[in-house]
Length: 194
Image 1: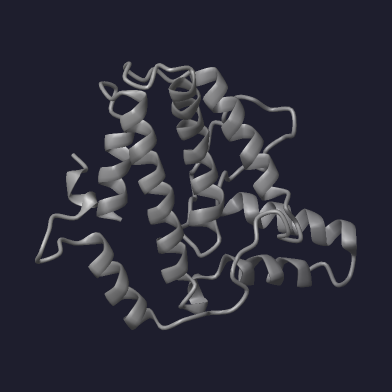
Image 2: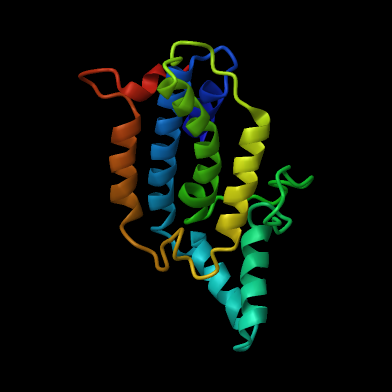
């Protein structure tokens, strides 16, 4: 998490160009995927399990089951179930955020991508070397939309997540340490994050 904090702070630094923001942003999304993969190795970190348990509480009532899933997805992310027409972020946003498998590379990465997309749009407009100034209204609108979409993905088809623990935490950790730390032969790309 210290590396992701460094990448996030570098990405959101107000003196960065769109090219730099996009580069840091793609690293953050990549790091989120790897974090999620590691979280998927331990059954107690599976968001999927929580959402499935919420469904069971409805005893077969589909409407109630859907409501419980939306509530449980919201409680572990936005806290308040987002409205399909909302554009501002709710007042208690991230009050009870959880870093569980399926949420890191799903929900949180989607929000990062709202920011990254604006940098990409600036690059596509041939202004990649100019200082990146995000449009907050556009950003919050995008965040509200992806928050709604993710929390209302009741069956998990649009944003799939691991349903069972997968892989070996030890060997995956070794691979990730090698990937994100310095190599003895050369400085790794991640070391350039300020």
